[in-house]
Amino acid sequence: MRKTRYAAAAIAAVAALTLSACGGDSGSDSGSTEGSGEKIRIGIKFDQPGLGFKDGSEYTGFDVDVAKYVANELGYPEDQIEFISSPSAQRENMLENDQLDMIFATYSITDTRKEKVAFGGPYFVAGQDLLVPSDSDISGPEDLDGKNLCSVTGSTSAQKIKDNYAAGVNLLEQPSYAECVTAMQGGSIDAVTTDDIILAGLASTDANKGKFKVVGNTFSEEKYGVGLPKEGSLVKCEDVNTAITKMIDDGAWEEAIKKNTEGADYTFNAELNPPTMDACA
Image 1 (cartoon, rainbow, N blue to C red):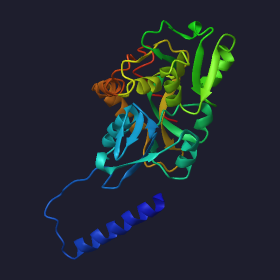
Image 2 (image 1 turned 135 degrees about the vertical axis):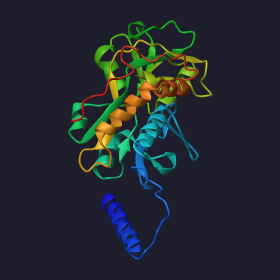
Image 3 (image 1 turned 180 degrees about the vertical axis):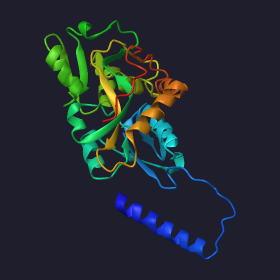
Image 4 (image 1 turned 120 degrees about the vertical axis):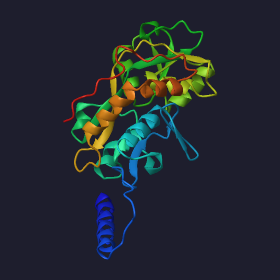
């Protein structure tokens, strides 16, 4: 796909040179951005409130805000961004098959993934945490003895509970975190567990505001990176890291977190955030 895009650009360039040779004059130098009018394809989640969420033609969430900021710094204003759904199980393949130029989708940086894709960032460091009713006295995983806890089937969050806290916890697994929250609304479970900022996004929806709180006692560390193709990337890791650093320094990063977790009774872990950029490979 990218070869086709580049070929079209080359043909356009030849045409422009031909017109110039014939005496054409634009009258002014309008300048150009790195994007040069071409769209950049960015993978996000479409179903994670507060992070990556599609509502009609509108895209919202912290991942979306960081993606827009970085893209703009790279020379691609918002009208040159094409957001594409990138489910967790398909992310590596979508980068390898040239379906995406970048991914912002709660994409944890791991050594296994680095074998297939490159990463910029991290732009956030999350940690597994608990979402509980606003009047709950649960303050961490040590308080789960005898409690009903919900997570998603096959998730790393559920596996961590099985590995480290299985003895006293009644773990219930659902297809999605939204279903876990619905079960907690009904009183059948006491807490939901996954990454803290995902929980904050769930708690900040209009339907859930004021009902739940993120405990704020993380028990893992997940570095959210910007996924990039390992070869032939349109985007340089160093440029991504420069853009994220600028977003942090000018306050837009923290403002994006506050906006997308409003009403969730959530404070990001200041020991882990703002993050320090990893060295580009």
